[in-house]
Image (cartoon, rainbow, N blue to C red; front, side, top):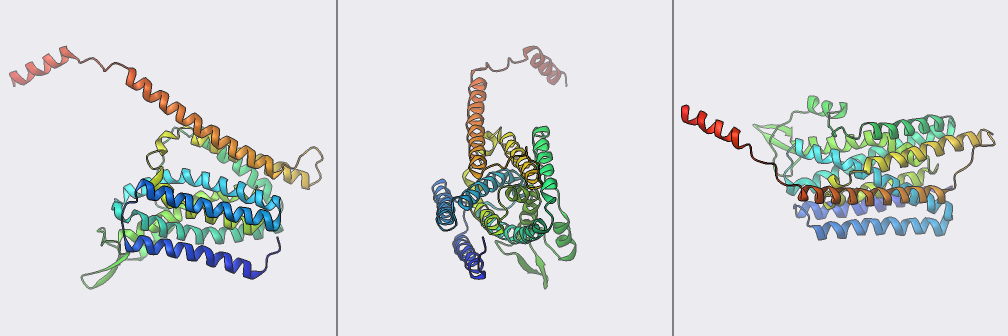
Length: 339
């Protein structure tokens, strides 16, 4: 895809316009969105992505259109896993519920800008060093193994270097000042926890991009498709946070499904790198196969997760309540009387 500069400028301007309108809506009426509102916004962003993908399909062919859909679905799925950590960050910083939309939106904007730089650097490196695909493939397979091997561990959040730098360099207060990111206290300008948590979400997302960016480069080498797929995935993340917040605990097999997707893309990267290096037995995986594997894995994972949690709920409801320890209760009552 040899795109003129104006296409990039128009695309970035379009994303900026949508995000600015979204920010205006959030800023003018801070609140915790209803279920209906979340569904409407998620459908809006999904619809935008689908229309954009169809446009790519029509203008630049089915291969590029398929690459966008495969990349967008992969990035969106990996972003769902990020919501666990976002929830931990919100709880740790005790963000008031009516301001969580603003925190997520600005954090996502920070993440999108940082990912843009990451994508530009990755595209430049890949164009010069084809052997990077072997490293990306091996890294994705290793990440998939970690997802399976450590799925029982609880998600944790630890302050990264960017967040520690903000805390150390900028004077801050521990008290929220409404939705303001800065405040004047005792004549001194300080940053509030609102800014700190936005930086936490934006920079933490970049750590997740260490596996999601190589994953999408395993599906397409077009920087334009990589960027737009990431942008659409991130833009719909805020409403998805509120929509499926209560559903996250029910997606018990999500990590397994994502590990299968990452492992598949990792193997695909290595096979295609070998194919381009002249290894005859190494196949090129068509984008239609990649798209089918990704969608099929996520559908099976979701259905299996919901079936598992429903069976667990029924089993828990059918179990008789634990018997009371009458003897122990009598001993405690005697002890109370003696004392």
